[in-house]
Image (cartoon, rainbow, N blue to C red; front, side, top):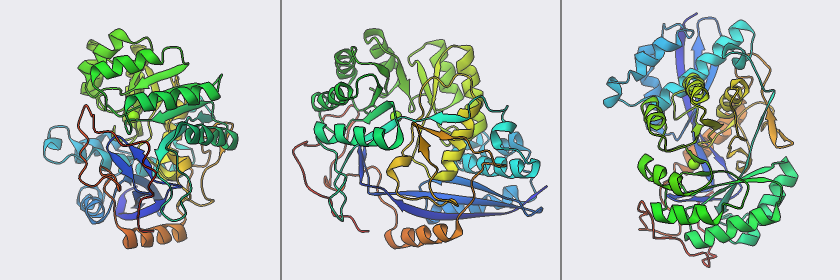
Length: 414
Ligand SMILES: [Mg+2]
């Protein structure tokens, strides 16, 4: 079988409300690039990558000169073909490789009549558990709904998500307001949802000393882990010496070199593996194997996803024996999907691993068209900017926190 064409379409899909984070905000929508890889046997594989626009579409078009005529089964060769580690000094295509790898797996699964997890070693889990992903959210620019700024609003959001989807693990994305305020919010959620598990992630915005203080204030809570309280392996190592809970990262161990460094001189206990950041599902499985050997925890990271990316996370989560924690997903914040049948369903806090051949999700071309048009109308958004704080630059560590009393509603086009 040979690859004959690669198509890329940028879409934007609305969120329930703008999601705030340490660097800025998701401005009420996600932008994703959907990839279709065609073959001479008529099988089409699907991939997905974060971000998009003309430049992303052009990158995928440029990959045709590398991959047309290539056998989609030769995944290891494809890695060197488009993401050779030394050539990557000039052309870093890790995320592009990931989207193409998903598509090739999708092709192979369809060709062989098996779900992708069967190619990866076979499923150990039929369902992957997820955590509720709680954000500080701006009110929706249209109708003012969905705000979570106060502890009370966050508790309500957490309870609603638990009632609706069955989550028993809750992640609060911090790094927006001063740590004292976010501590109050985190403790309020833990207090109101006793018996559940919790995790906090300020995206590396704290100083090491603040991270140690924050960690010590939450030692009585049933924390899955404290995620990226500081940026950098050495800061994480110092926090780990003084805080009695596992530390997790999706920012300072994102490749095999960093994983090796973390094993030789451990700074992080739990590695959050992202099928996009690591260049595909297969590198995540490899990294999970290394973590298994060295007894590090593993979980599935979310860099924002629609159904194709989510399928990659589900097949990955299905095959690893050391999935120690509930996975993360932004998925419950998006209002729709571009796959046939609409959004995959949460049940009892988990999502079923698809059983159909390949990734097990199909593209809804009407939805693809609809959200491609929406992207053309709205364009991208600056992920690393806050719509209500023009000129603001978050430093690392940060001390330029947002004001929790600021109840304004952002003006964003829809
Ligand atoms: Mg994180």
